[in-house]
Length: 356
Picture 1 (cartoon, rainbow, N blue to C red):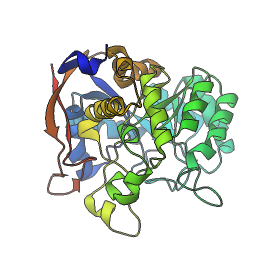
Picture 2 (picture 1 turned 90 degrees about the horizontal axis):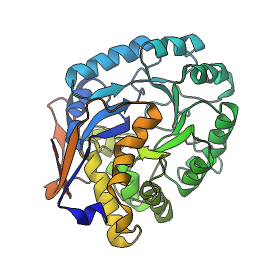
Picture 3 (picture 1 turned 120 degrees about the horizontal axis):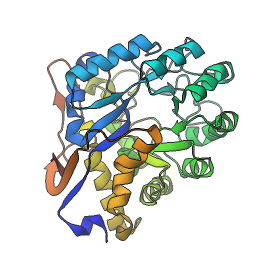
């Protein structure tokens, strides 16, 4: 029986969000306290600060700032793949409990100007990551240019994913914020060391959403109806290769509405679990998914269990959350006097979440 028809109140293990942007300074102060509002007690933190987190000391210091703000959340840290990263950096990262290294193709998204242009010079680093069992997190897009656009950038990156997997078969690789049916197929065909995260917003929108609303614009962009539906079916499949990573990426209002370019990023952190429930429930109502396929095991696996297992984590806190159909309204703006951010689906109704 579908979990949606089973009860007005759904109790699950706390969610784990394996892709978050928590920024620094005033924005960090604003968004970090919202993590648990979204039912999450474990997060994997992206390193694309300014300057990027390319040293172990930077990562450790950043973790300390985050833990001071929210001691009830487990923060998993990453380094930014860059020419300054060496095999020795990876060895030290392992000793300091850094979890992985994030790769950004140069210029494709927020604070990625110092990202990767060619993986070949970085092969010794990837070899050491494989040896030390650190995770490689891939922003899987090619830069726009020639016949590549934001709509084709992810699919054109997939041969790079397959090549890296072939060269480093024991290296755990995650294709982050997967957005296409082609990516679902590619990850499915890879061996057990390759997985992918899926966001709430990619389960809820298509190209039409961000084409008319800057607060829906992100990288990778949401794509076609067929692509969105493939992501929904990947979640419902219960395949442990696919698990949750919100890619919640806050920007102040002025960065989303003005300036030379609209900042890429959708902010979902206070409602991450609730929005996944909205997406699956809406997909069942529209006939994209069968309601009976959305079981407790499927939800527990996607929101928590599959990702924790891939990362080799125990659920040490063993906390529980309860989602209720109480029709909560998503905040229209969050602000703290120094900065602000507008949540995805502002003003719309969503599930109410509480902790037990």
